[in-house]
Each structure stands twice: as C-alpha cells, then as structure tokens.
Length: 469
Image (cartoon, rainbow, N blue to C red; front, top):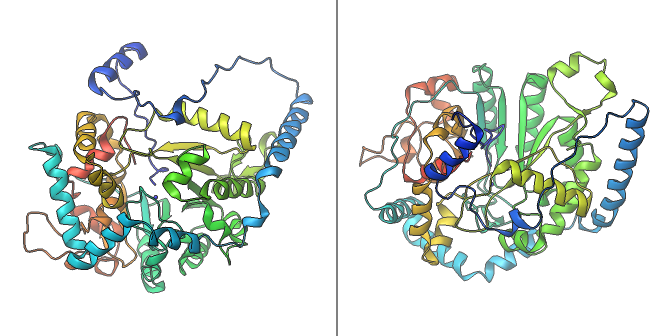
C-alpha cells in the first residue's frame, strides 16, 4: 500500500508568473501530465459551486442535520453487517492457487531467492531506460519528521499492484515486540519526529499493532500523529470487531486504499468482492465519526482547549489513496478528489477528508505485471519523460526513516522491498544487505543523518508528473 502524507501532498505549487503561464509550462515540461484518459477521472464533470448566500446561525444546524440524515439513509443499504466477522483470507488463498502468474513468481523466488530477483528486476528496469539514469544520486536527507514502520507483510488480500508482495502466505513475516519496543525507544530520543506511519501488509493483523499504537499514544499523547495504512477489508476479519473503536479511542489517523469508486476497477485490482467490503468499512468509519468534514481535528491543542469553538465536535481523520490500474500516471489530485467526494457521497452517503494520488512503482508485483505484458519499457519511458525536478524537495525519503519488520533501516518502503538497507553503498560489489543497519545499531534516528539516500532508477516513480509519496 501509501504514502505519505501527512505524508507529503503530491501537488507541487508552480512558481511561474501566472496560473495560465504555469499550465502552459507544465504541458511543455511534463508532456503527459493531465492527459490520463481513465474512467475514474471522466465519469462526471465537476460543476463549479455557486457562492451561496450566508445563512443565519439557526438555519445552518437544521440543514446540517438534514444532510446527515440523508447520508445515513444512503449508508443503510451498503453497510452490510453480514460481512463483518466473515474472513476474506480463504477467498484470497483460493484465488492465488489459480493465479498462474503469482505461482510462477513464487517458484522463481524459491529457485533464485529474493535478493537475486531484486537485482534482476533492477537490470530489466535499466535496460528499459537504456543509458538514462536517475539524475540525483546519493541525495542528502533532512532532519527526520516522520517514522514509517512496516510491521509485517501478512495481509488478507493479494493486490495486483502490491509493491511489498503481501498476502495471507506471509503470516510469519511480522515485527516482534522486541523490535517494536526498540523503535519506540529511538523515537523518544528523536524529538523532531512528530508522525508515526504504520503500514504493512495489513498492519492491524500483526500481533504488535495494538501494543504499538497504545504505547505510542500513552507515551506521547496527542502531540504525536499516528497513521494507520488501512486496506479497509481488515475491519471484517474475525477478531477485529472492535478495531474501529480501538482506532478512534487512540485517535489514529486512517489513510485507506480505494483505487476507484467503481466496483469493477477495485475488484479487478484487489480481488472479488473487495469493493463491497471496502464501502461497508468506510461506512463503519463514518458512523464512528471518521471523515466528517465540518468538524475540527483532534490535536494536543484541542485537548487543552475545550471551549469547542462554533460548537464543532472533534473528528477523526479519514483520507483515501488512489493509484492507477495500469501503466499510466494518476490524474491531477485536486480534481480527482472532487470527483471521489461527489461519487462516494451521491452513491453511498460516504464522506472523507482528503484524497492522495500515488504513482505505481515499477517494482515487485507491479513490475512483473508490466514485464509479462511487454509494457515495462513504455512505463519506464513514461516516468522518465515526465521527470519533474520540482518534486525533489518534497520527496518522502528526505524526512522519513523507514523500518522493516525485522528492524532493518531504510530510506523508504520502496527501498525496503528492494533490500536497499542504510549503511550499505551500491558501489560495494561485495556487500551483503544483512550487514546493513538495524534499530539496534543506533541510539537515535538522528544518527542516520550521515548516510545519503540510496537513489536508483525506480526513483523516477516518485518524481514523475506532480510527484508521488
């Protein structure tokens, strides 16, 4: 699954002299930006909102109440109580047993190992690029502000685009309590980090997830933002009946994957029936108070200030993530967010806060997908052709420390899956990634400032178009 918001917003503000001139420059500078012709961006046109007359204070609460009632009525049809407590894992395993491409990849991993697979994958990407190289090698990192913890690769789904090869078969690949506790100790020694981003797999299925969340909130209060990268269907797994209430009570910010607002596209990418399950889970979040646009965020400041300005109740943040179904760039983020909000509200009564667009990285499962279809070269050309140097300052890896479930330290989740551990240089031909740094080799995340970012040809994925993190 993604960044990274708070992760960095993907839209980069143009510094050209005027908006019109800026758009012309984008077209010249980024030839494929805004040209994506996918159903998700073109089903409906967003009509400009007319400026409404200001209503008196007595009328506003009445209209908000009517709107909430209407949304509740729409949600009733889709909330699907029958799905909760009904696992998706058995269906996913059955689909994997019939997936020849997945089985072939698993056989190759057994034969040559993940390390050689990653090296071969890099070679294939470079052949697709020819003599073109990512123009910025060994970038310097800034002071860390975000800690991303990939606490395991176990998942109830096996998505076609997954860059971490998650599935129900990865049940043993989860973070231990010892590693989780060490991550927290290092966080206490690094005051510049204000956000912990917990990802997977389906992180909620890992045994250390609730320990980690509860301990972080107890130690740091609401001064620390805690993000859960949620695949939505995990809410329905047996034993997760109280998950929404747990997340809400610990003020966890949800960033959830929903690659489209149509069932066909979601089910094609994430598995049969996943769309209905995702909609039911979003409704569960809404009903618990997540994603309510007219409220104010829960922060340390709102904890201290209980006067509830304008009678608005604190909300719990629910953001969505879109990634393309195939070998193309995502549509412009702001326009797509409006489209998502309109479609989800009109069809299902669902509200959320923000939408983030993420470019699919040409690694792991998605790289195999492209290679088998003879589309990898075209995709790498697309990313390189739309390379945008304006995205460099906002790249997630600049201010992020990424920790894998074994405790190894990386620049980002993508480098983690490619085995690019910190403390190793690509120039060392005899390196062993197992010799790279772990959380037990440092006393603070600030200790990593001396190590440059291990950039490579996959970094075109985060710098194409308007950026992706």
